[in-house]
Image (cartoon, rainbow, N blue to C red; front, side, top):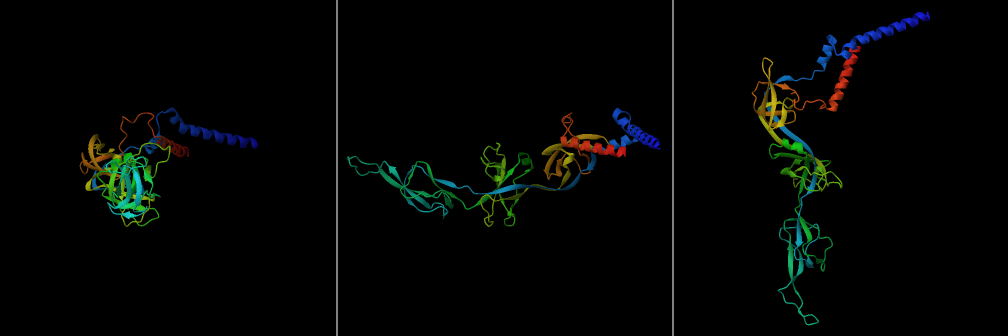
Length: 347
């Protein structure tokens, strides 16, 4: 009895191996595939399909991490140095443009002085006032007091407007998404007051030493300041130096224009190319002029007509489609797809 049982198990295992070999042999040999192979190849097909050029609207929005900075002030310098004779204000005082901050006695070669003990005439002095160069809040005086001596060119104080700006770091490649100066910026402070409109100030190179988001760059950090977008924080929005938040920026928009998926175009800024599919299935590579993109659709300014069919997604440019130029993530995905397909065939 046991002998027959063992013989039956061995026979079942042999039949299973032969069946598996029947399905796998065409794959291993790379020979003519049967119906199962055709199904597998179809499942792995990632080619594009024709999509129609249509009319629509595009609004390009960008959300950036932002940091609030106090508006930089102007230094008050003692150009000729001298001895402090009077201090008119203290740190934190709000002053008008032109208000006196301190008086300094400076040497004056033209002024006659008293004779010293040896009968020689001493150098004379004259008193000058240092004024606020702008309206704002005073800082930098510290514990300066009468009798202190200032070296020529020393900074005695700083006057900064009582204003703030929000600053956001813009990745270099995202600069392509700015089609004009931002006309609509909304600033939201984390755990702060409700979001408010923030007036555009500038878009340009980041200040030296500034890190992404507007903070101070850490010692030993990477070089390259990148670009910064800044806007004026409304005066009625309560903020503090260094608080963080988000900046929603409208970088461009277009209404009632021709649009296609961005995946149907090689290139997304100013110009690109698409593959137009004719009614008979023939394909033509055509250059197009591009406008605003929201990351999903892109405006086509010229080169196409409404109703044209373009291939989506467009294949990789053959000049870049070379062996070894496969994204590791895509390769891993294809491996998983292949393994799932193998499992279905074997079942």
